Image (cartoon, rainbow, N blue to C red; front, side, top):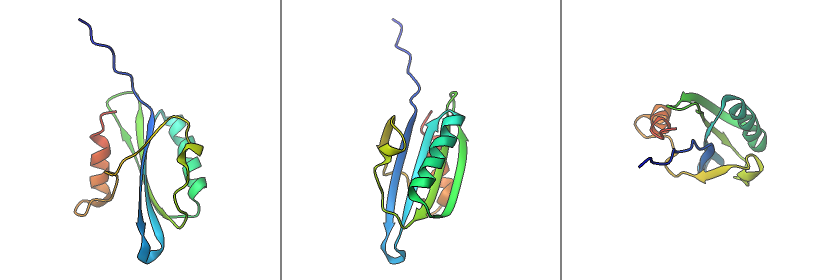
Length: 116
């Protein structure tokens, strides 16, 4: 029997962690899509949460034709409805956070493990 082909899923994963002491919120986004769409969605995210600080991004190639962009930044703006940015699949992922020992690199490793 032939198994059905698994379709590649474009999506945004996100998480946020409030830092009450500094009155800032850490934001984490992973955009899985094609390159052109990733660029548009990244811009929309930065516009929605501006002004942003401590921006870090990493473009990650997957095993498929899709790519991923990991975005980390801090902002004083509290999380808003992300569906304004993207009408596709959006999911909160509590595993998106800076790793204590490995920092941003550990976060990149987690994104690579998503098998996109």
